[in-house]
Length: 166
Ligand code: CO
Image 1 (cartoon, helix red, strand yellow):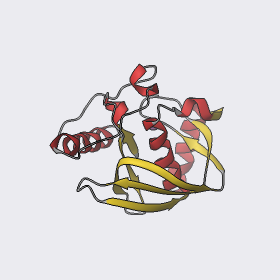
Image 2 (spheres, rainbow, N blue to C red; image 1 turned 45 degrees about the vertical axis):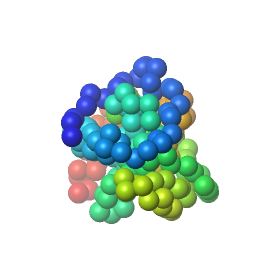
Image 3 (spheres, rainbow, N blue to C red; image 1 turned 90 degrees about the vertical axis):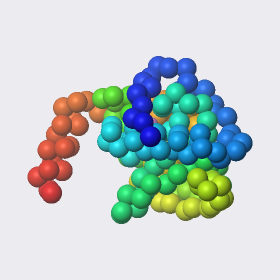
Image 4 (tube, helix red, strand yellow; image 1 turned 180 degrees about the horizontal axis):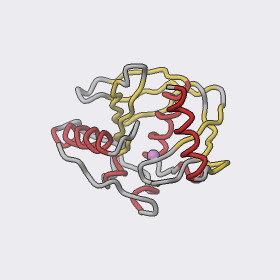
C-alpha cells in the first residue's frame, strides 16, 4: 500500500483507453489499495488507475451516505437515464472546476477484489462520480465536457457559503 503521485493533465496515460484486467491477482489487489491510499491523501471522491500511471480498467469511488468505497474492476455501463448539470473537479486537474452534464441514474456491472461480478444502481452525485471514473478508463477527461468553468474566487465564495450553512 503506497501513496502514489497523481498524474496531471496533459499526460498521455490519461487519454489512453485502459486494458481489461484478465486475472484478479495480488497485483490488482495492491493497485486497489494504492488507489485508496492516493485518493485519501489527496481528498478525492474517486480515482482511476491511469491517474497513478497504470493503464488498467480499475477505479474506485466513494458512494452513499457512509461514503463506502466502491471498487470497480472492468466496469461497464449497462444503462443510464436522465441528465443534470453539476460542478466537478478532478485530481488530475488541480484548480479546475466546471459544470458537466451527466446522467442522473446509472446501472453498472463490474468485478470486486474477490472476482465476484456485481451489478449496481446509483443516482445523483454517486452516478456522476461513477461515470467520471469510468470515463477515465476510456481515456475521456472531464475538461472536454465542461460547459462552464468556475474561477478561484467563485470556488472560494462557494466554500464560504457552505461553511456558513454548516
Ligand atoms: Co478525474
